[in-house]
Amino acid sequence: MDSQAQKISPRPELIKEFYNETGQLCWIYTSDRFLETIKSVLELEITDKEALEKAIREIKETEELHKREYLNLTEKLQENLLLQHERWKKAFEENLMLPSKMLQDYYKLQEKLQRQQEEIREHLKSFYTFSTLTKQKATNDKDGEKEEEDR
Image 1 (cartoon, rainbow, N blue to C red):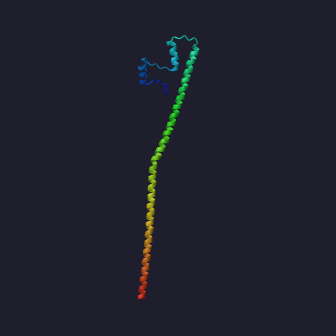
Image 2 (cartoon, rainbow, N blue to C red):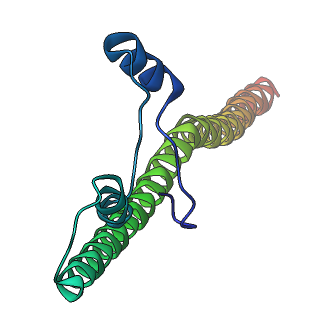
Image 3 (cartoon, rainbow, N blue to C red):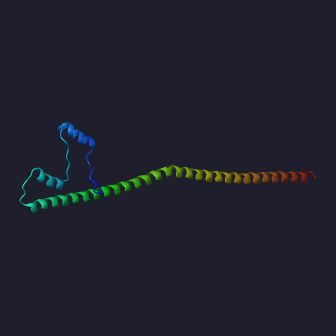
């Protein structure tokens, strides 16, 4: 039986196999229905009807208990599967993001390196400009001194 208490039949290939092997039809009963049917089929005289009804009730209760346990286990299994699915999904998404994040970090580092290289170029330009000006001044000073000496 499924969770909505609908009767589920055996798989058709199993019924066919049973017939092929035995030449008989396959009859499937719930336990309580079996006791009721067997009593009428075998035309049994049951003197203690109370005992029979008690046995049928106990079988029904046991079947209900097993059904509830099955449904609880099924529900727990579904919850565990959903949790596991969420964990795998999260891990998968994180792993997909990882290369993307690494690539973003790489580009950021590359931009930082380019900015630092530009700053170094600017410093070098300033240094060369200062160096050139200093040489020019020194040259001009020397030229000015020579002119004064020549006068």
